[in-house]
Length: 194
Length: 194
Image 1 (cartoon, each protein chain N blue to C red):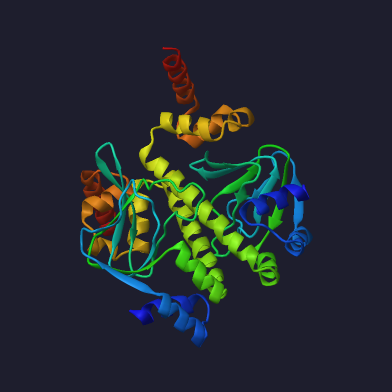
Image 2: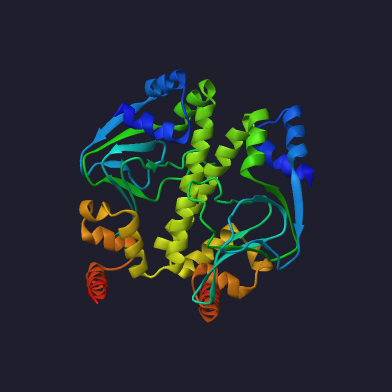
């Protein structure tokens, strides 16, 4: 588990022995059962998580319905909005879809690490920039893609989700009712056979 | 103009004389006319902008239609996705809605500044986190809010846009046709009079 986290960082920037040690020392892991929440709407989002193993679904409850807005799996960050000025309560939920092991961090802990090893602040900034760009793409996809296009993109970018996540959550994420997802799948299957 | 930029940074973290000077030295401003583009879809998004004065509209061209996805005004960042691994061409456009003066920066220039003054990296990370949280809220709003709710939220959070931006761009941003926006406005006006 420790190596998994170190490997991830060393892909972004080469760490020296001291930095690697500092990272492992500061690293706190936590295990969640399937169905447990990392965050519930209404709570302050304080902790940020790095997924070592497992899957977290993000959803917003709106008009009594769960609208799935994201999935996070291995080597992905589940980022809190704590550092921002507003400090508003979260409007989203993070629930584990499987047994999930994460590294937990927060602003305070990050600060302590950045002071000892400034390079982690650079890495942190790079991670934030990538997360920002990814989110921008998600937003753009909502503006411009049809549900069918979103289905095809998801299939290409994250094929593992189709094995791990029940269909109705995928339908919600794509923005359609489960019945429509079945129709989309049939249409794609038949056009592939033509 | 220089003071405006310095003031913005000093709101996030107190700068010493050397840092202030370093920031002003590295600062490059650029003026754009109304209708000029900061970025066109298909180009690589390299530069990040801080708006000193003016207004930039972000839009995506989809099926021959401009879908407005954001507005940026004074003291807002127009953030490039250059630092990310993918380096894909932008799918969005940034066009000036007014005469606009910006500070221009890029990754290289940022790096040079961070090396001299590490505190700017902290500030940069904080700005990215705030931008990330803001974008998350925009995404959540698309998932959960009706166009009418989006109109009311915009009116509350950014009243100046209603003076600066033509109605049909606001309609596009809210996610409705211009005719529907007129209906929404009438409905809100009549319920305010009740």
